[in-house]
Length: 178
Image (cartoon, rainbow, N blue to C red; front, side, top):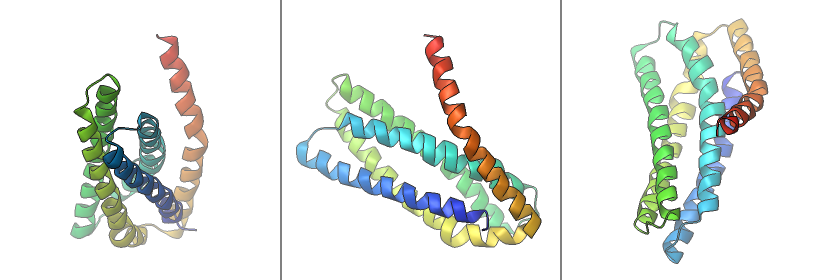
């Protein structure tokens, strides 16, 4: 399996969450209310799975490896775009959580912001995923030898293995400081 295999499989799960967010946005519109539990679950998923786990492998392993290669200009441009899009995704997720918190605290106008951010994220992620899957991942593998690809895939498995321990160690440390 090439290193892009697990990344593309992860994309399918991210797409499933996005579909749930689209469904929730429709329910919110109909009811005129925010479902804070679903928004919290979506934020946790997007921060932990989509960003920390998935983008973590992309940013810290694949993209880092590509940065050391002599990329064609169009591939370098897409790489730079993808890195910026990861930052933009993090910003939108942070704004979604803040808007949900304001709604829970009693600000009814925050419901419109939650809805707008769900819509923005539902547009952002499919376009980002399509760019990676259709325009970048396959040609990016040409920059790596078979041995480099095998090593990268092993790094991915090791990254995933450590992730849950990292997350919950951070949660306990945070709670200890309260």
